[in-house]
Image (cartoon, rainbow, N blue to C red; front, side, top):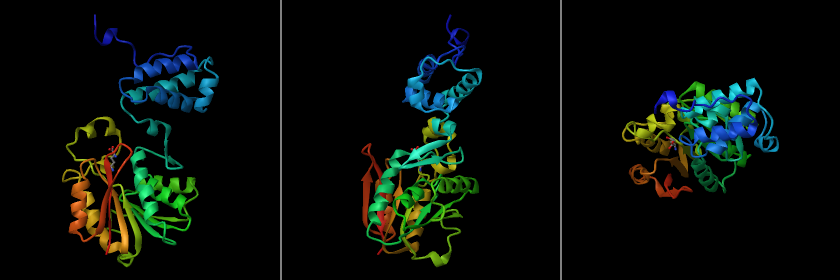
Length: 297
Ligand code: GLN
């Protein structure tokens, strides 16, 4: 007979399981939901043991105690429900930084490092550049730039105070808190008028997924919707940012935005309509046009 009654208990029961056995079982149950079942299993078990991955390979025969088993079981249950590893661990690597992540913030993605890299290039010749990061989330972009440019001064804003709390913690954790001012602001709403024409660079990874995109109810459903989805096929916030940034940029300064795989052309048009020049899009490591930039006159 098939069906739930006959199916293997998920997650498996780790009675007197060794590290090696626990990992093997977990890997099998995670195969259906994860692209990296072995890595996920190792990261989650290492977290429960408060050890690193090397420890797991050095001591594969050690038997897990009850608390460790329970912890691993809880993690696996959540992971099998698509809950992201980064939230379970409470941290995510980005650029050279280790960032705290909570369900209040989007988990920083590797493709966003393209935005950081491009931003650093555009300010390479400017001393003490003033930079604005719109919708900073965990603070990933602002902190990565600050870590590479000790002379840069940054303002990072987000509409949510809960999010800013995480970003501030990340600044402190990475000893960059004296270089970044965090402001609660829905895009430019609370950015002072005297900041007009004052930035050498504006960067943003705004929400850009269409509200009817099925991904929102799938694997990314545990991440904050406000950080992911935007009206007008995902273009609403990108449009606000492109339209408004031009007045806050110094002459000959860049706005760089991240966008979705099919939004480079639309973004370029918006840059053009709003009198930016030197408009370009760049491809990420997956060869997807991921960021677009434009320069003020
Ligand atoms: N790159 C993210 C994803 O595809 C979306 C991030 C965003 O909307 N800014 O899951």
